[in-house]
Amino acid sequence: MSAQDRVIPSAEGIAASARATKGKGLPPVHLWNPPFCGDLDMRIARDGTWFYLGTPIGRFELVKLFSSILRKDGEKYFLVTPVEKVGITVDDAPFVATDFNVTGEGQEQVLTFTTHVGDRAAAGPEHPIRVVRDAETGEPSPYVLIRANLEALIDRKSFYRLVDCGTHHDGWFGVWSGGDFFRMIPSDELPDA
Image (cartoon, rainbow, N blue to C red; front, side, top):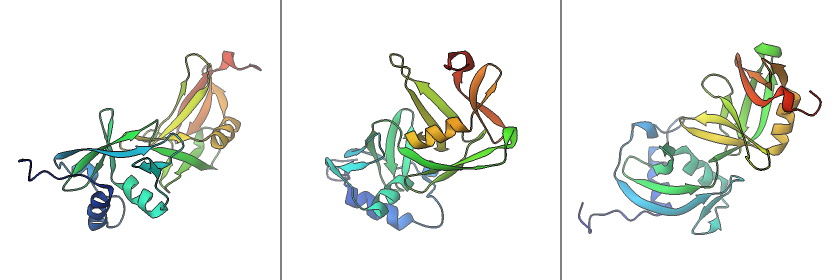
């Protein structure tokens, strides 16, 4: 590609391309292999706020549109359309799980999470929950896989509710969902164990 043929990425151009591909459901970004066009000054903060050129993106519809064309390749995040692929920065996880509902009980329990952009995923074999503990403070950071390598950080209020759904199994405290047990902390590390 010559210098004069090179696409200069912009949020407006990406949004226009994404709108052009919009149909029912999520676009098939996993099937698209456009050329890498460089990095865009776009960032997703740990709390789920999207920024462009250092300013929060205030239009929910635009954030939802961008989130629909988000892809993670290796450890990097990209917005992908059929004609361009641009890198963006993600501080932690690209989504925040802001709520969940519970159906069933015990090992039959299913936890269905909803993200701040409206994605839903029922935790289970295809959508595992994981908890990472800070090495220094022991503070937990819980995540649930939402789609294709894209996780949601489970917000604090939802994590507290998740703990209320927890139980002990094989020496661990965790939760059941979709027939799988997701470990949170060794049972013997709980204060009242």
